[in-house]
Length: 255
Ligand code: 13P
Image 1 (cartoon, rainbow, N blue to C red):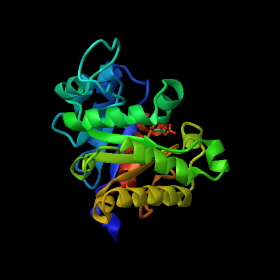
Image 2: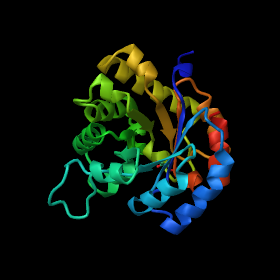
Image 3: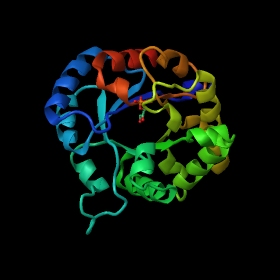
Image 4: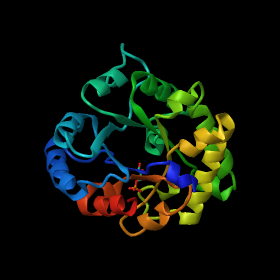
């Protein structure tokens, strides 16, 4: 099965939650629970101000740390922004790009998602690239078109070599923070569509090697069914990543 070609990635997206002190306490607890669980990669994408604490707490463990956004310029007059070089220097390995909350509330576009992706990859970060349709788009029957377009634009000028450091997260917007999870079949269908887009842009071997996560109300109860699907290689988890018990159950489901 092609699924065996890929190591699942279970990533928490903390969003705007947790202070540095809470981060340290969380990772102290989590690292014991997930010790030795190496069948999947475990990542926590934390607020910028928590990164250094998270990196220090996770040192020597199997928990990796990421950010939730990055600016696309190397440096300059961009008040309030953070560059890829800054993230790398403080020990971040991953960065979430194009999350629907950034698209909805902060004016993120497919073009800026592409620029951020290129900046992050060129600097040496691994990218968790989010795509997903809104409810009205699903109801209009254009999920495939939307997700394909988002994927194609985000990967413009990304070489096959760079693609090795890209994880795609399929996050249907209607399932985020709503408790309304896509069914395992819906998740599988769209993750397979994304894999097909990658096969066309690159090669089938590249597509088979690309990790494609599902995100949107993934939790301790539904994770194993979602993760059992052929094209679902992990999860990007919001709410349930804020509790070590729940997050550990999801990690276990990916083992
Ligand atoms: P929830 O798991 O809280 O629905 O959030 C999903 C998400 O947006 C992860 O990036």
